[in-house]
Length: 584
Image 1 (cartoon, rainbow, N blue to C red):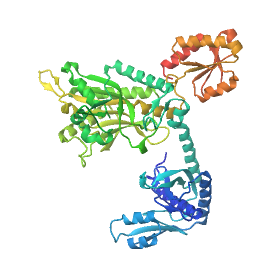
Image 2: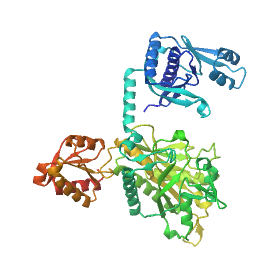
Image 3: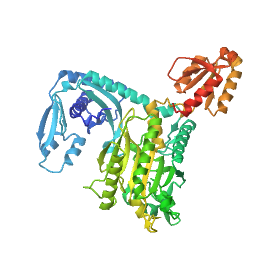
Image 4: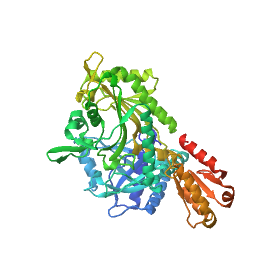
């Protein structure tokens, strides 16, 4: 999707269209007063005080109609510069503008306004030359919004819109918005019975329904199986810890604002854990290790909690309680390259098998001009960053460097995916850490009998399972691959009186092969039941009538196709099992 703030002309065009919308609102409701109308990544909005009036769909149609009149009239957009005292006089009857003006620092501040015909508003600009350029627009949505974002303030009416230079661009964008709605994992999650939210439980705290937990288990078993094959040992640790644990790790100093508040119990202070590395450090410290033991690879599907602001929560993509596919690798300095390469190879293998193709690597580094939020050790940082660059260059990975995006304890390699809708985000991560092993006084006995500090690699291939499910739902529009689908085969007997017995026979056959099935024997027409099977995006639907009973065969349709195929029972079982195994 386009970022309107980053395109200079789109920025000006949408800024001007926001003013044109405000002018239209003023024509329809002369008592309207306006707060701010900024350009945002997805167009523009304006916050408006309409008294007791609440905007509805019919109002949006009326506003758009008036905007078209204003655009057709073609008034020029003119900039004026006035003093602070002149601005206070000009907007003396508008408390929202007075609030903005009085918060400007200096008395002799030059303030700019922009006028178009009978409408003038405070604005820094810039704008296009004439409202005639704001011809191709659409008001997208509307909602209530607290003035200044403060729930103690009045609720204003917020109207969102977009504007483009051409009708073709506008139509393409609107088509993309419709596509985004259809792919939105929150919509799909509700329709397919995957997860739910309830404010009584708490915002940002998802609950996985039976269908969702099947997907969860399949992903967990898949990634743990991969890890076990290359020597990972899995552990289980508690979802909270003593505050002293996080003070030792440094997270309390650097990450406290993102944690839930501490709890005091029997003289101890606990906090819900936001990450798992401190627990895994303590597991390593539980025994004496030799260089012969290394690398030690500790993995966990771990429940974590972070206090995300309510405005940033989004379905299961961004939540307050989530499960990380986490692991920590303890190794000697000589093993960094081979182990880091092993992690990258695992990520690439998973992406290939799960058909993830639109991604790139980013190397996140410390900002040398702003070191406050990082562990204070220049020598350690230089070593870690140079080591990571060398490893990536040696194994031939292309990457973009991102200054200031490192974790507080070390540089990291992030895999940024570009989802089917929305902006790119981090899916997988791999971090090099010389810091936490020192903080926890971790050691191993080296060849010469001396004690050395191990190096740690933090890595998460799925990132969080929650975000991965959200990503995969949107990539597939909810039509999950066979191996992940909660129901893999739906069985429809054409007529229960004559065909139900055979349908039950096929049902038992597939159950014995651990294929997830459903049997729809409702007294409804087969066409109706078929449409419902399609709506549920079930990969394979079997239609069993007299022909199949007589020949002991199976007729099936694959989701997305209207063709019906008939094969033997044995062929169908082999075909389904092979498709699941190959993750088609």
